[in-house]
Image 1 (cartoon, rainbow, N blue to C red):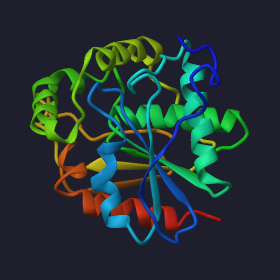
Image 2: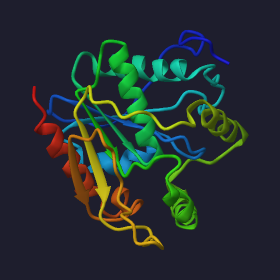
Image 3: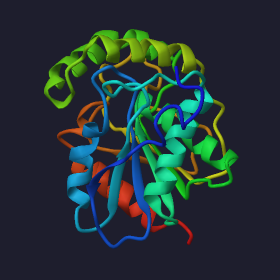
Image 4: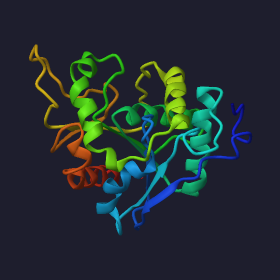
Length: 241
């Protein structure tokens, strides 16, 4: 276990996915699935090449030979220090999808606590960990991951161990924070209509803006990712500078 960032070998090294003249750096935050990582966001970054800098930050302990963080704070500090070093003083907007959106929010809060809040936060189709829809849609969520297995890295024992460890570190719903502008991106199609007919759409009470984009929970980041990317790019361009 790493008891501080130095013991982890230094801050996170981000993966650059796109470059462009827009002044803000968009940093994508991976989720905690064993097959996830920065590669998840290659499709999102593709439409932004030539327009905006896009990078992705990994999760400590998922890389081969990496130590797991001893505490949530070390996990977040490892990411935050890496993001700030990569940004080199330029404004940062964090992006996360699904479970990665919850981690992106936690990272935004930690950056604010460290005195360097992000210029903005984008949460794409985020749901609370205890939302009943996550149980009702269990089959669809599992099938969606399986259908897109080629987008993920091979799972091994170390990654599965890391996923289990992070589940113990972060298995609580964060309190939405209002210290930074937040955009909620919602899928316009459900994975399946809820049996009781209730509103299935993603919600985040601290969101300043809400935008619906084409697709469902998965296709908004795949077949319809171009529209999703443009919505993010447009919203960032409207942030106060």
